[in-house]
Image 1 (cartoon, one colour):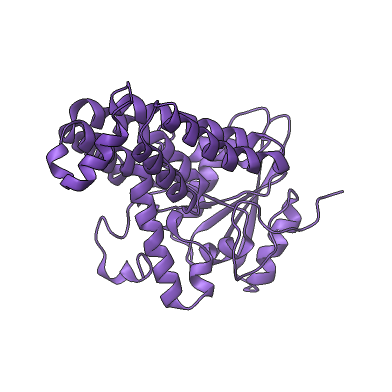
Image 2 (image 1 turned 90 degrees about the vertical axis):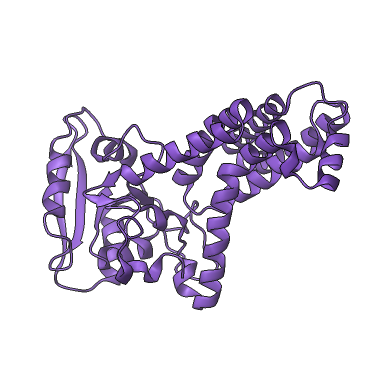
Length: 340
């Protein structure tokens, strides 16, 4: 027996289809076939895993797909030598271009409409049996900040919320580092009234700003992980109530300042606004080196680590496509669907 079709757990939408992929590869391919009835839609089969012999289907539209992409996908899949494939994450790590990078270079989704849209754009979808997560290649950075709602709502709403997500990305990556950098090294850049407010809140705090930030960030990450791993009814209570109670208790105990609690709370909320959990994980990892550099070297440390991240992101590729395409290299005709 297979699980019945249900809405996607990780990519909820206000308007749009409610069906999500299941663990059965036949059901999943039929979802896409129902949406794209073109006779040129192809599903090529590959079997991977010497013991599990897991079915993998490569979906694309002949004539639209980029030349050579399907052959490259097949070559990488056929080069996998492993006993068993239990989830598409195994495949993803074997075939991605930059396995050591925190940035995801392959898109994963549970939504059939998202896969159908990607195939219509000339991409390739990789279906793996026994998992509801389908891989889409090549992937560029911008699509990780796009949601299905952007296309189903009027373009004013879609554009507004997409810009909100770009701002949320910047906040979740940089806000704690900027606060620590300003409070530790560059107090003259903070407006006087705000500086007095922050100073009065930190009067009793025995730690430097960097240690204070690391304590709060680590506590927040701990609560997020606990909320994720615990049973659903308990998990939500732990994450929200725990954050409120611990934040308030930490301020009253004089371990952290109220401003730091606000900064970490806003950062946490901003990270929840990003549609892709893979990019959200990447931000959580990159936030710590940025924070430590800002707290030890000030603006110089922040700028150095930020530009190192930016140079790395611009240099990686996904199946031959530049990760920041079409912004770098700049292609004016392809700018239509990035910000607007």
